[in-house]
Image 1 (tube, rainbow, N blue to C red):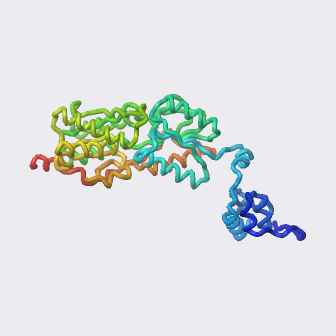
Image 2 (cartoon, rainbow, N blue to C red):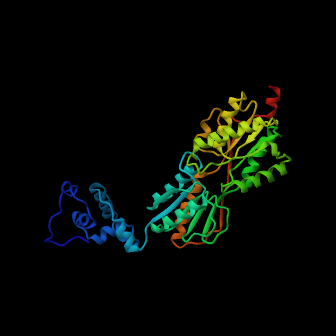
Image 3 (cartoon, rainbow, N blue to C red):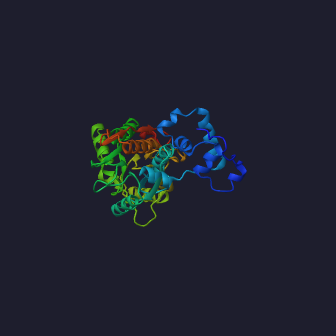
Length: 364
């Protein structure tokens, strides 16, 4: 693989940094053939036969000279784009950010590029962005909390997907277990009159989670009272949906709940953001959490543990769900279709300072 005698001497690294370093230039600098350098940098199967010292020298020179592979040429040669499209409901602190951290980690580790768009839980945007991403030659899709009306054209993994569709693998939380964890915790603390925030109508998780709550409450002998149940609106069309919007919505729902005048000792919120908004509303009304009202959230977003008081919540393994989605999609793109329609992950109850025995309130 060494060049024969008579070839021109290699140029110094200082000279090479002044121009764009191509594969050919890098190979000449190393006194190796372009094929050898390409095999090593692209981790081709035959690279196993190349000495470790040669590989180390190639990688060191590529880093020192700032060599960047021509991904367009690579894509044309292999007829692949090595990119995927990712749709999330919104980009902010919270559920989507947690899932995206896992998606991003796995795709970067595997050398894939990704394009991200926010679908705002609008079916028209989901359809439009799937077409746009397809036009940009992505190889597959990862959808987060998006409702699909029909099977996409490309291999797809849906996080919080609840519909059985051809070509779609759904990564879902065990909502039955999650609801039981939260309600058993409140029941063990003596709470019988529990208020609920039901998810907004466009959320992919709303109906499954709510049915799980109703079933768990029935099995535990807890009554789900209409006067203590409010459905979040989920304002996606204004362009303002964000963590801040979620806090405001939780605050407004809590004020409405208090205005109804029905007695309750605990609140189980649809997500952490609305639970944090409720915490603020209860404080504004002169109630202490958890002395007067216990609060349980859902998701375990990054800021949940740093609230005052820290928020008891049902943890969705958001990063794990994102990594699982990325892994499944890339394995499917590699030809492995041996995946079930639904891949289930397990929740965990994070007990913190926002819940306390119901008897404490009566004594107060």
